[in-house]
Image (cartoon, rainbow, N blue to C red; front, side, top):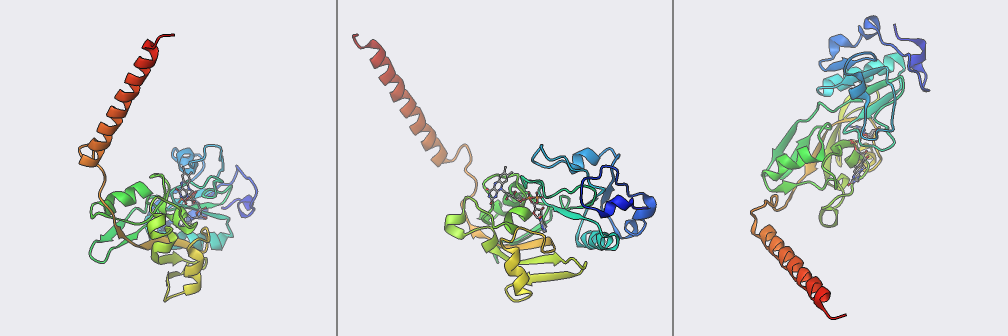
Length: 259
Ligand SMILES: Cc1cc2nc3c(=O)[nH]c(=O)nc-3n(C[C@H](O)[C@H](O)[C@H](O)COP(=O)(O)OP(=O)(O)OC[C@H]3O[C@@H](n4cnc5c(N)ncnc54)[C@H](O)[C@@H]3O)c2cc1C
């Protein structure tokens, strides 16, 4: 059974979801369900900020929207505290909760690039480096973050400041639509045309207006990665070497100058 403490929000290391408690979830869930005491538990509850040490009662690693819906419905039935995890980079550690259910989207890394329409449909477990790798294959990019290992989901839902923002706006400005599992466990698409108020909130509201299971991003043409043999890089390297050489000459002259 679900321990009574599972319904509270303060720290509860002892929360246990046993097999009987999970009977309502396991038939509907394809991903992994990780509980305290399991070999994966400590890795699965760790986030980027190593100072965060929360102990969820259950971590539901979702493989798709159906898993997310099942997890949300399970949480509703048991009145559980829920946290949503994308890339796990929120410094306050909001991706993990004590005692409740973590809806972990990190296995959801699907990405479909439409190079003609210049859009990408992306799942929320992707990190920016993974997203960029695929769009770069078509010399396209969406404005993301500055660091490649932040999650696309939390960053975009919080607005998203990055390298391309001065030319193409924030990450959130480039979201054309988002698929969302609502707190009722229903599924909807939010865009400028459908559920426009929710769409407004998703673009900068910081998350938790439901669980976003995919984003449709507008892409922009960008040059492909600079490689070590690119002529720009080799020119820059030449300039750097020349400058260092001149600096060395100046230092030597200074050393040889009469006192
Ligand atoms: C090293 C580092 C570099 C950073 N660089 C930048 C930067 O360049 N630009 C910038 O704008 N920000 C930056 N940030 C901040 C970062 O954008 C936020 O911490 C963001 O929350 C990280 O996204 P995540 O998916 O990794 O977060 P997580 O910790 O997984 O999630 C954070 C919160 O976002 C919400 N959330 C996540 N996924 C979903 C979802 N699918 N549906 C609904 N809600 C969801 C939840 O409320 C969750 O608690 C950086 C942070 C770090 C630690």
